[in-house]
Length: 332
Ligand SMILES: C[S@@+](CC[C@H](N)C(=O)[O-])C[C@H]1O[C@@H](n2cnc3c(N)ncnc32)[C@H](O)[C@@H]1O
Image (cartoon, rainbow, N blue to C red):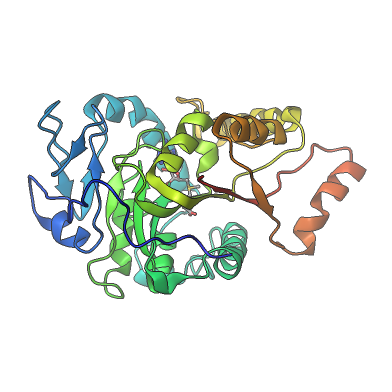
């Protein structure tokens, strides 16, 4: 399967590139991406990063467009603080370019090897079964992009990625993408924005990928709705590396366990916002009804150890472990 790639949409002419109203560094970095920007506060279509209707100015710096309105930045401040603290304690990120350039195939820091093994298999599955058409230069939204490794890989494969995340720090957030810059000068556009309110006009991306990020959403309908709004008709939304449980009770039990671990280890439950944290068939069915979409489910092989986990857990009378699948939905 290849992602749909249409040359240009009909209707309103494309606004070239987003014109910056402030510091010009992000403008040059967005050249060639032909992004059509939408005000994340009043939803007006914009020609620049300053909204003439509500007055919101999207500041730019270090190649990142800051597209969280001040009230939303305040809303997410504690989540970002807790999350950054936990991720730093988990040993995420590195000072060396090599670490980032090897992702997702090798974690040379050694701190999160198992985690990166899963990411690598999901990515390989996506590249050989879904994103097979890089030469088309299709535009892809990398939603919850973290350090931007997926955008980097997509760029190398011939796509035009746009990375979106709440985090902008230089280890684990959008700032870390600078480690890719020697390999891909100019990088890719990066936006600090929330999954539930994307600063882009509709129907302009060939695909939107939530890689290990959809389950952070507080409102699946809103986040999926935003991704579907931004992709072109025929474009794809991909949800990968979000935990799935066969029963809601198992997801709830996982949350209770994790809450306790976080409190003991980090002194915070990291629950200042109510992320939904997992998928179930019921949740997926609800979304498919809400948007009249059909989910196609892919089952990457994560190794026998991983495949046997549910059976072993059952034999030992333990809670069902999470499983990872790839969910694809095509916009009509
Ligand atoms: C587990 S990380 C995955 C990062 C990357 N996609 C990867 O595969 O390594 C989840 C990411 O989602 C981001 N995130 C969580 N909630 C978000 C939200 N509401 N809006 C935008 N990004 C969010 C986090 O900041 C984090 O970088």
